[in-house]
Length: 72
Image (cartoon, rainbow, N blue to C red; front, side, top):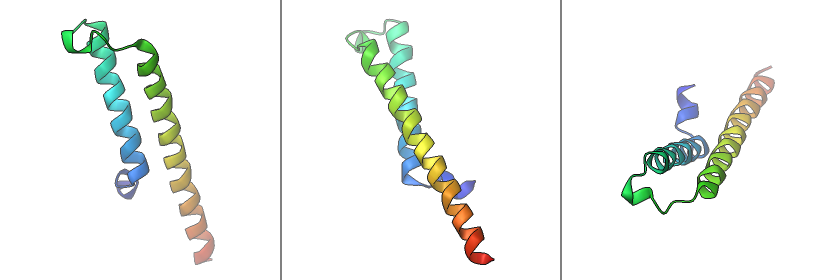
Protein backbone atom coordinates (compact mmCIF):
# COMPACT_ATOMS: atom_id res chain seq x y z
CA UNK A 1 0.00 0.00 0.00
CA UNK A 2 2.91 2.33 0.69
CA UNK A 3 4.15 2.05 -2.89
CA UNK A 4 0.66 2.87 -4.16
CA UNK A 5 0.73 6.33 -2.55
CA UNK A 6 4.03 7.02 -4.33
CA UNK A 7 2.45 6.39 -7.71
CA UNK A 8 2.20 9.61 -9.74
CA UNK A 9 -1.31 8.73 -10.92
CA UNK A 10 -2.67 8.26 -7.39
CA UNK A 11 -0.82 11.35 -6.17
CA UNK A 12 -2.37 13.44 -8.96
CA UNK A 13 -5.83 12.09 -8.14
CA UNK A 14 -5.40 12.95 -4.48
CA UNK A 15 -4.25 16.49 -5.32
CA UNK A 16 -7.27 16.94 -7.59
CA UNK A 17 -9.66 15.68 -4.91
CA UNK A 18 -8.15 17.90 -2.21
CA UNK A 19 -8.25 20.96 -4.46
CA UNK A 20 -11.90 20.28 -5.32
CA UNK A 21 -12.72 19.98 -1.61
CA UNK A 22 -10.96 23.26 -0.84
CA UNK A 23 -12.79 25.05 -3.66
CA UNK A 24 -16.13 23.54 -2.59
CA UNK A 25 -15.56 24.60 1.01
CA UNK A 26 -14.64 28.12 -0.11
CA UNK A 27 -17.66 28.23 -2.42
CA UNK A 28 -20.07 27.13 0.32
CA UNK A 29 -18.62 29.48 2.95
CA UNK A 30 -18.55 32.41 0.48
CA UNK A 31 -14.86 33.15 0.93
CA UNK A 32 -14.10 36.18 -1.29
CA UNK A 33 -11.31 34.43 -3.21
CA UNK A 34 -13.59 31.53 -4.15
CA UNK A 35 -16.71 33.66 -4.81
CA UNK A 36 -16.22 33.51 -8.59
CA UNK A 37 -15.72 29.73 -8.63
CA UNK A 38 -18.41 27.86 -10.51
CA UNK A 39 -19.99 24.75 -9.08
CA UNK A 40 -19.73 22.97 -12.45
CA UNK A 41 -15.94 23.16 -12.44
CA UNK A 42 -15.80 21.87 -8.87
CA UNK A 43 -18.00 18.88 -9.74
CA UNK A 44 -15.97 18.23 -12.89
CA UNK A 45 -12.79 18.20 -10.80
CA UNK A 46 -14.38 15.70 -8.39
CA UNK A 47 -15.36 13.43 -11.28
CA UNK A 48 -11.88 13.71 -12.80
CA UNK A 49 -10.25 12.91 -9.46
CA UNK A 50 -12.47 9.86 -9.02
CA UNK A 51 -11.57 8.62 -12.49
CA UNK A 52 -7.84 9.19 -12.00
CA UNK A 53 -7.90 7.44 -8.61
CA UNK A 54 -9.92 4.56 -10.07
CA UNK A 55 -7.47 4.06 -12.91
CA UNK A 56 -4.52 4.36 -10.50
CA UNK A 57 -5.88 1.69 -8.17
CA UNK A 58 -6.86 -0.54 -11.09
CA UNK A 59 -3.39 -0.20 -12.59
CA UNK A 60 -1.78 -1.05 -9.24
CA UNK A 61 -4.04 -4.10 -8.77
CA UNK A 62 -3.33 -5.32 -12.30
CA UNK A 63 0.40 -4.87 -11.75
CA UNK A 64 0.29 -6.89 -8.52
CA UNK A 65 -1.70 -9.67 -10.24
CA UNK A 66 0.84 -9.80 -13.08
CA UNK A 67 3.68 -9.93 -10.55
CA UNK A 68 2.06 -12.89 -8.79
CA UNK A 69 1.61 -14.67 -12.13
CA UNK A 70 5.26 -14.19 -12.97
CA UNK A 71 6.36 -15.62 -9.62
CA UNK A 72 4.47 -18.85 -10.23
